[in-house]
Amino acid sequence: MLAKLLLACALAGAHATRPSLRVHRRGDARVPPEPATKRLIELRGGGVNLLASYTAALNAAPILTKSLTAGCIFTASDVAAQSIAPSDTGRDWTRTAVSGLVGLLYFGPAAHAWYEVVVGWFPDRTIRSTLTKAALGQMAFGPVFTCVFFAATLLSTRGLQGLGQWPAKVRQDLLPTQLAGCGYWPFVDLISFSVVPLIYIPLFVNFCSFIWTIFLSLKANRGLKADKSE
Image (cartoon, rainbow, N blue to C red; front, side, top):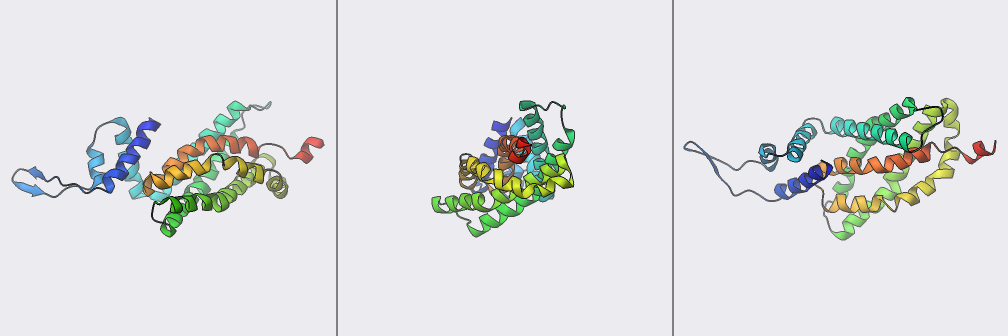
């Protein structure tokens, strides 16, 4: 299903940049060519129908749609992370809920604003422009998001006392996390900015975030070295 959805995104971008020359007839009346999005809705196939419904939601409420998508994916990521590294005390649903809220309240709106701004600054899809946008993501958006995620995780697992440990957590784990991200996110950004239409970039990034957020959740819940020595 994911492959169908991503393929449909690429096809949507191709149709959107290529005007149609067809003229439909309804009775004796000549009807002008229909927009690419409307043609997509009329196509058959599970992936395209899903994409059409998602596109309609994006057009009606872009920020809300992207936020709900991020919230669902971040929730699923933490569930997967806790399955990979289960706790002795059982599943922590508070941690899962907080992870989902980070996606819903922060990542969704922030990604919407970020991609709108960065593509506005560098609208073309040349290699130089694509590499610049990818580099900006690694230097600005990525580190800020990681710090927010660390803060939310500490708050959910240790309460207000955990926020006092946030600076130490950032010093300990931010750089290793970003270095690990350099082996993943630049490739995601290269695909996003060179192939995926702007309207679907947050969707594509959200799917890619599923894997990354599993790693980030495991990293965020790793104890501080001071804690281990106590």
